[in-house]
Length: 281
Image (cartoon, rainbow, N blue to C red):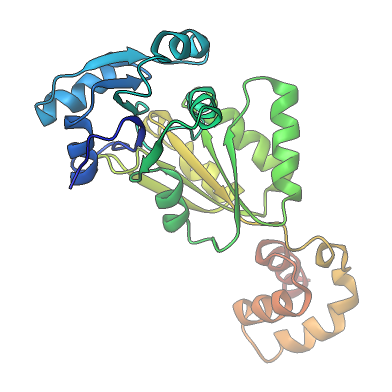
C-alpha cells in the first residue's frame, strides 16, 4: 500500500524497455505532488505511457542549488519524486546535493529501487563480479582518459564504467594499448531492441566492434576483469621452455596453453603466442 508520507522518493525508471518499471514505482509516481527530473521532455514519454500527469521540475548540475532553494519549503509537506532520465538516480546523475540537503534537515527520504544498467552489464559480462568497482563515466579530456585507463589496469577488482557514443572508439583504442590481453565486455543499448554484448580480450573485442559503424550508436557499459596477475606477469616464460616442449610432445596446443596458464597465472593470450612459437620452432 502506498502512503502519502511527505519527503523525497528516489525512484528508478527503465533504462530502455518501459515495461521494466515496477508497480511500486508507478504507484509512487501516481501519488506524487512534484516530480524532479533531468529532462522533462524525456520523462514525459514515460508519464504519458503510464497515463500520469504531474508537475515536472528540471534538475541538472548547473541549477541544483536553485532548485533546492525553490522547493525547500515544499519538501516537508509534499511527496516529491527524484528520477533521472533512465535507471537509478544519483548514479552519475544529478541529485546528490538535494539528498544531502534533506538528510541534514531530517526530511524523510526513501528509495524505490529498480533498473540500473550497471548490474545487467556485470551479469552479461562473463567476468567474476563478486567484487567490483564502479568508475562512473569515461572522461572527456586526453590526460584524464590516460589516468582513467591506468587506474583500470592496476585495479585489483572487476571494474565497470559508462562510455558515451562519442568516446567509445577512443576508449577502446586506449584500452588496446594499455591492457590488450585483459578480458572485457561491452554492453550496448541494454534492454532495448538492439541490445548487444561483445566479449573477449580487448584486441578481439575492438576488432569485432569496429566491423560496423552501427556498433558506435547507443549507450555503452564496459566491464574489465581485475588485475590479479601483477606478480605472475613477471614470471619469465623462458624458464618453462623445457617443460613446455615435453608437454607439446604429449598434449595438444590448447591443453599445453591451459596447463601453462594455470601454472604461471599468465594470460592465455600471452601463453598461446609463446607456446605456438615453440611449436613452430
